[in-house]
Structures are given as C-alpha cells and as structure tokens.
Image (cartoon, helix red, strand yellow):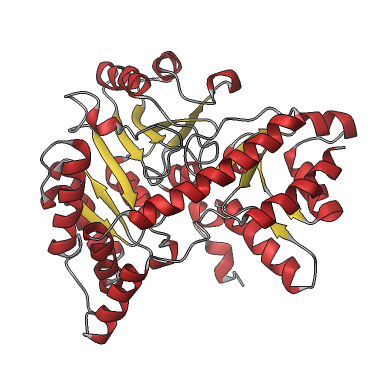
Length: 394
C-alpha cells in the first residue's frame, strides 16, 4: 500500500531544511547535553526588543487588538512605513506602495510566486543567503548564481551580471548589506547594476533587511533610488527584525509599484490572511518612535566587528571586510590544506568536536570552502571563541 509520504510533490520532497537554522538547532542540542559550546551562528541580534516597542505589543493584547487585519497590513502601519521611507529616500511614497507581512522571508517567497513562471531564471551573486536558491526552486524557477571574487569583496559586478543574462532571465535578487559577507554596495556600484537591469529588461527584488546596520561613515544606498527607471522595476523587502531586534515578532514589509504590491497583497490574502495585529502595533511604535535603540545596537555591533576583524587580520585567513550586518565570512582553505580536509563542512564539524565552537559552513551560502561567523554575541563569548579558534588554527 502506498504511504502518504510516498506522494510528496517534487518541491515538497526535494527541499532541504534551512542550514543556518539547522546548525543553530545543533548548537542548542549540544548545549542541552552538557557540552561546553560557543555558538556563533545567530542570524539575529542578541539584544532585547526596545521597551517602547514591546510595551506597544503588550498594549495591543490588553486592548483586544488581536484580530485579522487587511491582507496588506493595517493602514496606519503602511502609512508609517511609507512616511519613514519617504524621508529616508527623499521621495514621496504612499501606503498603496507598501505590503506588510509576517517577516521579510515570506515576502521574498510571495514575490517570487507572483513574478515567476516555470523556467524563469533568477540571477543573484554567490555567496547568497541560504534560502534564495530553495525559494526559486520551490516556485519552479531556475536559480542562476553569479560568481564573485574575494579581491572585489565578493560583490556582484555589472559586467558579470550582463554576461549572465539569457533570454530566460527575469529577476535579479540582490541583498544589500549582504548575508553572509557583510559587504555593502556603493551608489556607483548600484547604478552600474541598474544600467544592466534597464538594458536587459530585468525586474529586481532588493533585500535590504540589514539597512540600518552599517559601520564607519557609510550610509545605506537603495537600488530603488539610484536611477529614475528603477522604482517601477524594483521591490524593496525590509522589516523591523534586525533593526529593532524583533526577529521573533515576525514583521516585514515590501515597498514598490502598486502594480506589483496589489497582486502581492492578493496572493498573501490567500496564503497567510494577514500578519499578526499585535506585531503590527509593535512595529508601528518602532516606525514612529525614537531611533536611539538602533544606534546603540549598531555601535555595539561595530565594536564587536572591530574585534573580530582584528583577530582574523592577525591570523592571515582571507575574509571579506564586513561593512554592514553582523557576520564575517572567511576562507577556511589554510586549515583545509594543512589538515587535508575536503571542505568547510569538515572544518566546521571538527571545530565543534575539538573546541566546541559552532559556525555555519560556507556551503549553506554556495561557497563550500568558507565559513560564516556571527558577531551577534557578547564580547566575552567572542574573546573566548578567539582563544579556541586560535588553538584550532594552530
């Protein structure tokens, strides 16, 4: 007799679990078993949600704001997002250009659902965030990662994008600042990409979830704003998860032309109904409230970033200088060659066994010889990890 599990669809049976979530779960399991584990895998800030934002969530519960809302989100929140980005981008945006969802991640998937036909190519640089490739496959699209070079910060170059376009290419997917590298694109680099987008008739999903976490004197540049032809071709996906330490609240939003936002909201109405009203009220407080908590968190991350970069600079391991987000992506080849190991998976598994330090293997991001370290951890944990990594590298 055929079992139910024998009848999974091709996409349902062929998609792996998120490798970043899996390795984080492994770290928790090992800790629960009594192992001395230092996990540097977190894709979320290790700070509490700001008090005024959390209070707004509590107030929502106590006042009975626990219902369905409009599929695209509450009008007040959509207006607040439009107002915030009108000031950020120095251009007028309306609430009709905003769709709110239960995190940025569902929006990426929903956008691919409304934009892709079977066989459409989606272009994105390698390394890439772990879920991009899976999402494209789940929507019967063709993932097409584009190679990058370490000496250029593992960033997508316009000439490489242009050379990769075929008659099936439809969508460019760009993450800025970038997970896993922390690379940040300049306005000049984005304009060069925008020219290829126009000339090769591409659409763009610009994943800008780390937009508030930049270091030094850098300011975030959005692909949406760099050229007059980009707003009608670009949907920006962002949210409050990273900026306000609200990953568990699950609240993100997309901004773009109503011609895309309306179908997106319609799709969401069938797939999700609407995002949590409680989380929306908290996000409204975040949008309209003080930004000092963002700056305090950013400064703390910058100090940790400097510690991590100093350590890796002293080791001689090749890495991308993280100008944003809270990750360092480094080449494990010196250890692989010295020990005769095949790739970063072996590097990371042996690191757990020998020193109890957990990193995310680079194959999760399409680069098997690399590993990602998250500095969303206390300075004490980072310094302890440096001691262990130093022993391991030697």
